[in-house]
Length: 451
Image (cartoon, rainbow, N blue to C red; front, side, top):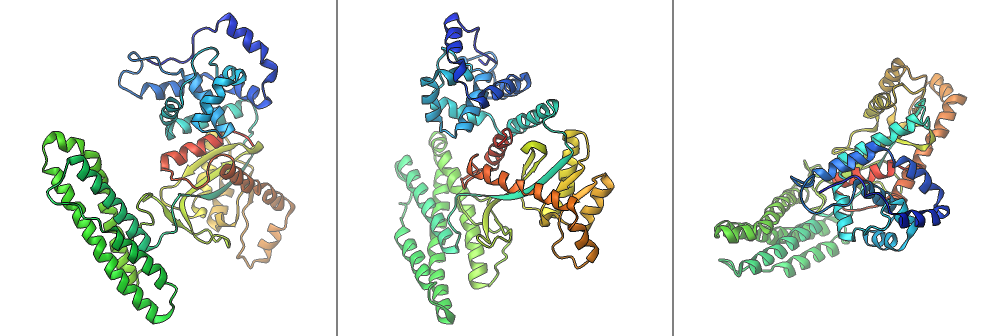
């Protein structure tokens, strides 16, 4: 059963709240007023209602929606784990008062983790949208200026090489097959562990990579032939295990359904790695379609943004756009990386939809420039388009980019770099094994707060 708030606080709870009132931090007072918004609480309430079929009327009482929202905000601001969040709130009257828990029981860490999963990407997007509306209502945002930038959120993977990917796939398949064999009490054929051979060949390839020239290349090819052969045998054995599971009785088959799904998924990924390894090592094709760079995070893309310190990054592209007073008005995680120049007009359109007017100033870096973009923004009513063209030879363009208004826009644009730095350092966008949903969640949490 779900509810929006705890029951009316007791007299004793009210006395304790008054006692610690002067201990509140300034940000907590501001957040307390903002989080009193009924639409924010209602959105969390609706998300809890979809948790189970009859969550609204059946079962034990869940943590109230208001408490869930405030606890998750507190966790985010303090950058705590769920275990630390539980301990700190239980021991601190200020946190209890801020979270509107009072003398009630604090949810344990496991419950808090499940409640955090309830708040998915759609809920985060709605909460962020409502926070932007509140900022507009309180005239924190006027909508006359807009800046936009992109960054790469990297997934937590090792640097991908064909040999390491084959080794990862063989290791996972062997481990899952062993688990299936143990859970089934034995299969038709015994699972053979070939990992010693795989590890030796992966290490031999790494050593042979130090040898330059045609001789070293030929040596690596010969070792790759052996590694591919062993990996194919592991895949073939995994398919046989899947067939054994499919032939079992229904009850046993249901018990092993999770392991069977893991095997089927990993077999498909390893076969893709085998194909792209053959194409690169023996065919010289380095632009294999749908290249896989991790068997654990298959959504990872190879992204090159021209950084001298890190020319190649592995992750997903994220767009962040802001208005005045450092408010993130919109964010987007792209399933497939677009070019930055394809995002500028769309960003202005989103700005207009959210805030109801075309910005007077649009600032972005040179990656967003195109003549068509600048022309279209002028037609839409943008007075100052501060997007530099680094490759122009036009004297007129050089003169335009030296104007005071253009330079002022570019100085304001550099705030995007600071925002991205804060998002990555402070708000949890460091390399993590994130799904697309968790990227949205992290970005949404960051967008609700000012620096």
